[in-house]
Image 1 (tube, rainbow, N blue to C red):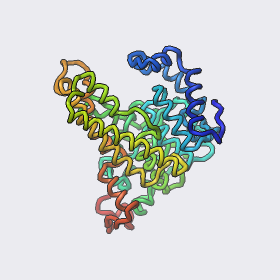
Image 2: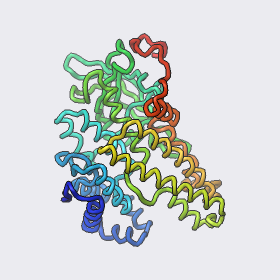
Image 3: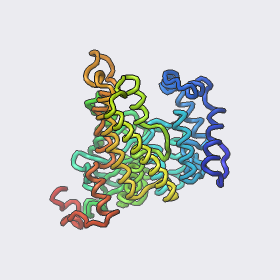
Image 4: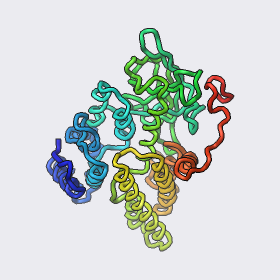
Length: 409
């Protein structure tokens, strides 16, 4: 594990992280990063066995989860120090991929906040070392934006186990996940927010079926999941029975915070678009150039705001203010998708049959993703209005009714 003083400054943490990378990255990877040889870097990132070894090395050093306690694979760093680590890892392309977002950003902090000592011991270190991938089993066909309206049912059996039946949807990486975060209704006789429990699920459990959903980009990284007579052990419960909504709030706040980007400042999507515009010749267009530079400024502002918010809170977990950054991030992704089609207009319009989707076309088709995932932009505006601006909440005349008696149950 890397040795860092708890009183180290941000610059000292960054320097120590960079020294560690120079000592531990494979030489060809390190040289490719320093030479900006994207082809060689991409080859390393595509080497599954090599990346597994790298994730384990990164996790054992504590750099994958720097704010976590040392006993669970972290370094006990402050949010400010962790931002310095994230910045260096991102520059060296040595950070963990989006596939691990749910485990690192959602599962870890949620288990740390609500798990038993046994659950922390069982689940956290494999996440830190990249040994287990997680997915999120929250949304349902009838409970998307109104998540508390979920109807997947978990019934406790005489032996203490739980029998679960229901359907989930929009579950990113569920088809490759080892474990999942599950919300299920355990007491339909209680109001909708008070009868939900939260479970940690082995995705290989009998009765659990994952069906990938193909998107218009051609990808199929999110899925629908069917649970039929799925039996979960008693220790799958995270938090209290019927206390799952409080646990879920921890996860949801982490998700909104995480989707606005890591707490680090550096080259981002706008930089990549500018580079591609120069290569394509579209950089010569002064209007397009102005729009790219405006996006770059907004992206840097979001990065710096994310770092400031993380440091100001003294923790990696955000409150309702994370909805502001998530909303801005969603707008930036839409801007980037639109600009990509102008930066590379030829490849955005057509490509050889059977060839992979060009980057510009992919980014254009995927640009609405973040405005939907993790709570739609409309939901974020409602959260900002109610929790940050103090505006009245939307009325719900059935708020205190048992879930089983609600007209929309």
